[in-house]
Structures are given as structure tokens and as C-alpha cells.
Length: 383
Image (cartoon, rainbow, N blue to C red; front, side, top):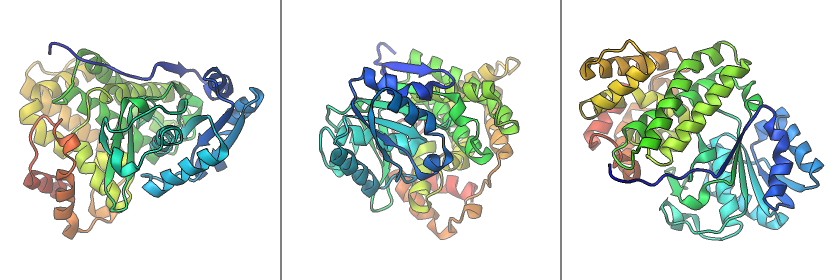
């Protein structure tokens, strides 16, 4: 490596209760009318109360859009954009998990600079400027609050990404109090998702660099050491904050050293069967790691040594230990771990492999080249 470029959100605010500062933060960006993007569950849960009170105390008007759907369909995003334009909003807040934050990114962009979604799928095709944008994650998983990526579901059930530096938010707000009531299965899925981000950033074939490596290592350690704690006690504020920071660091890492085959094989599962993204990553994680080991044994060994000070100095031994560690961790999670148990027909596996091979944007980053047959074998191994 002789040079690299590293980008991230310009400002990160991390504090318990920080959501109550959203009015002050938005006003500092010149906002007068804030468009808040969230989902119906979060609205009904009352988690938004502090944020809304903060906006009102700062004298800002706000419009709530709570119709975000999981794996946002294009139509859902277009409806949110239309609502923001109709309201005359001049700033956007994404409040929720990855779907809300991904939607908020595109609302901020398209409400200011209209362009057709099919024209901007891919890397560097979206153009700005956009409205001021603040992101507030309520799960420790996607890292979307510090990435330039928005993933949508097309009318043909494909998951496609808009990737552009103009999607980095102005401010990411981390408030661990928002994650204290997260149910165990969502905690588990999002936590594994964040760990996958760290692992794939560390082993990415393209754009891997010293900063992304340092962040990936820090992320994986925080997530690995705290995920069992938050599953045992969901109101452990210290562990919850560590998970949120781990997710943030992993997001910063993979925004610059992009993810690979785990995500490429996970996307068709989410697109066709609407399975949660963290779950689909978890389902294929161990077999993809095993497939990659011939090309990534050294990196996997380094990750194992970072997690376990007593790990072997032999790369072959340590890399196998790392894969076993990840497989064992996923086995502890409170969700079913076979495609069959999640309603995937065996007859669809070949179709899933074909769809995964179409995600070349990610497969090119994998440490080992993946063929259709390889993808099919991985799906079969977890059927």
C-alpha cells in the first residue's frame, strides 16, 4: 500500500441522552423545518419523544415520516422524498435502524437534487448537493450513520446500492439510551451484522488501509466482547454503548474498505424473502469465512490474535480458530441458523447463487474469487 483516501462523517456526537440535543444540532446546520424519517414501530414506542421535544425547544418545525419499510422499496423512498418536498423541509434527520437511515440519506439528496433512482445505483453516480442530514441509530449494527451507502430493494426484488460521498451525513448522533430496550433477536442480528462489517473491511481486496484496519480491529473487539453481555442484560448501558461504538467503528471501516462475499450472498436472501439483513449475513458468515481461508488465513489469524491474546502464532492454526470462534458465536444467537427454517425453498438455491453473482460491486472485494458453483455450495451448506 502506497497511498489511500479515507472519508467519514465530519462530526460525531456520542453521549447518553444526546437525542435531546437534536434541535440544537439541527439549528446549527441552519435548519428551520426538519423532516424526521423513522418507522412506525419507533414512533409508537415513544423513543422519539426526547428528539421531538429537542426540536420544539429549539423553535424548529418538524414533519414526521414514519412509513419507512424494512429493506426500503424504491416506492417507499420516493414517497418520503415527495413528502419532504411537499412539507418544504430544509433538513433531514434519520432516526432508527439501517432502513430509516438509508431512506433519510436519499430523502436529503433527492429533495434537493432530483434524480431517478435507477440512474444512480452504483458507485459515484449520485450528484449533490443535498439537504443537511443528521443520523441517529437506534440499533448497533448497520453503521449507516457514517457510511455513504443507501441500500434499496428494486421492483424486481434486487437489493441495489447508491454509493456516493454526498451521502455522508453532517452529524452522527450516538445515544446508547435509545438501544436499551432492543429485543434480544434484533440485538443479535445487528451485532453480527456489525462484526461482519469489521471482518470484511479487514480482509477487503480493495482500499484496505491502516485507518480502516485500526477501526475494524477496534470494532470487532468491542462487538465480540460485549454482544453476550447485552444479550444477557439488555439494559447494561456500558455494554450497549460499547456495541454502538463498535458498530460506528465498523461502519467507518467498511465505508472505506468495502465489504465482500458475505454481503453479496446475503443480499438475495433479503431481497427475495425479506429476511433481516443482519440475519442473512449471520446465516452465510461461517461458510464464506471457510471458503475464503486459503486466501485470507493471515488476516483471519491476525483477527483471532486480536480477540484472544493466547492465540497461536501459526497462521493456519489461528485462522481456523477464528472461523470456529465466529461459527460458535453465531450458534449462540437467538435465531434459527438454516435457510430451511427461514422458509427458503431448496429449489431456489440456484436462483440465489445467480443473483449473488450479479453483486459484482461487492464480490470484487472478496479475498478469493467466487464462482456460481461456489455460491451455490455455500447456500447448500447452510440449507
